[in-house]
Amino acid sequence: MRLLLALALAVVAVATPAGVATAQPEHRSYAIRNVKTLEQDEAVRKAGMEVDYFEHGILYVKGKPEQASALRKQGFKVDDLSLTVAATPVDPGYTDFAEMAAEVNRIAGAFPALVSKSVIGQSFEGRDLHMLKISDNVGTDEDEPEMLFTANQHAREHLTVEMALALANLLTTQYGVDPKITEIVNTREIWIIPMVNPDGVTHDLGGANYQHWRKNRQRDAASNPLFTDLNRNWAYKWGCCGGSSGSKSSDTYRGPSAFSAPEAKAVKDFVLTRRVGGVQQIKLALDIHTFSELVLWPFGYTTSTVVSGMTADQYNVHKAIGTEMALSNGYWPAQASGLYITDGSIDDWLWGDQKIFSFTFEMFPKESNPLEFYPPASVIPVETSRNRDALVRFATWADCPYRSIGKEAANCPAANDYSLTAPATATVAQGGNTSFSLSAAKTAGADQLVSLSATGMPAGATVGFSSFSVPTDGSAHTVTINTTAATTQGTYTVVITGVGSAGTVRTTRVTLTVTGKPECTATNGTDLSIPDGTSKATSTVTIASCGGNGHTTATVQLKVVHSYIGDLRVNLISPSGTTFALHDRNGGPVNNIDRLYTLDLSGEAADGVWKLDLLDGVSGDSGKLDTWTLTLR
Ligand code: 0X9
Ligand code: CA
Ligand code: CA
Ligand code: ZN
Image (tube, helix red, strand yellow):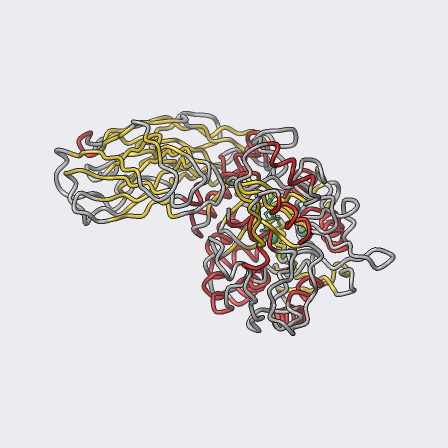
């Protein structure tokens, strides 16, 4: 339960060596073990402790040392988590407020044609909230899809400001160098707010050691603390659902009212200025956090996927774009509430209130370790460049996020428009070919001539069109997909793209199933329980007469039902004994795995017994292997 544990520890500025001046904790964090019954739970609450959350039979609470000793006398095992946090010296390699301000000014000065800098407001303590706009003709509000990047709502998540600044540097220094970056800067308007919580950052970096500080530094009229978790202060379903705290000392204190925090309010007010003629210009947003290596999307306040304010299509767009980014950067994709319920978070508001497709990154590290939020600054280059490709892909959807599910004609109509239609599915035997019909039909404006192409084909397969250029008159044309004997069996999403003579780009998607040599694939669908703890479960399949080696793009389709996949390791072991890691403790507390893994098995003889090892690693979880299918060629 790593991310949550880190969250629970955070409010307490602790374990600094004697003599070092630091904020004294008002409350300490405790873990109360073996809370099994409601009566025990009740006893803890009666002792006056504030419950943060419950996980793996452990109740994480905050309270006073007297309350902890009272509970110990009643027989509870109460661990003082404060004592487990090591003092970590501040690493000067991270960007502080003054350095961030200098850097945004430097970037704006160095690229005046591409970058403009502004200040969207002030923090509680009066620090400027700096923002960059990056686009061609940056001084003009062009009719280009806009994107918003925010970072460092949480003070101690210092890697996030580095990510925001690295993105600004990427977009500027690579302009005119990297064609993809040039295209993004020419066709989008990108807003970057690298440090949403400068007071918190300044506090966190203000001593010899980090302060483990998360919230802002707000105080009430009497100067009493009103330190607020900015990512619980947004108005959409604010405080609705147990995903934030009403207690001022809590690390997830939501504030006295929505947008009570000046930093959240300033970002909100800026976003509202991007409504032009009633149309929100910002189409995509990313809020950057650490840690756990996750890509999250709304809603956080509910575990329902489709709910009032989120249609199935809208959920699927979030999922498609989020999953694409996760496949690029190696993070785990999930709906935000799969982690834990949050209410009043920025992404719920950006979507729920403004219909901006919004995402949250939780950056490095994947797991908690003694360093938690504070990896050495030496990780900055690798952990920021790691997201480069994911962010480039992200930007490509900004013109019409619905394109990610092939529904742009319905959702992003153009003046001159047409829809492409093909069957939803097609099946082809390995080495054979299949044909289906395709048509382009005008829905608005002028007739167009549409040139066709396809992506997403299996390796070695080719596509043919009866005509590469078709009119938007609805007439039927033929698409043929040819495979070879080496084409890997499996399921593919073939995206057929049309570019109309008036510039309108439309796509249609065909789910293509390649049925292969049946001797080269095997399924074991027998449920296998995964023991809780350190002994592994092993499932096997036997490939008897495939012959030769596996393919470079062999696959394992894996379905696991498990309460905490962040503890789970899943390895594939070839007949010769080589281990291939499929899942290595990704995804934190997210439930279940239902995923296709692609592996290079070309160095492994196909025939023999293939094993799947599943190891839970940590106690407190239960689960089972549901089914798995190995496809070698
Ligand atoms: O709790 C949070 O705000 C985020 N985790 S962190 O450790 N960086 O504090 C997770 C937010 C996930 N929920 C939503 N994005 N809605
Ligand atoms: Ca522009
Ligand atoms: Ca604009
Ligand atoms: Zn955070």
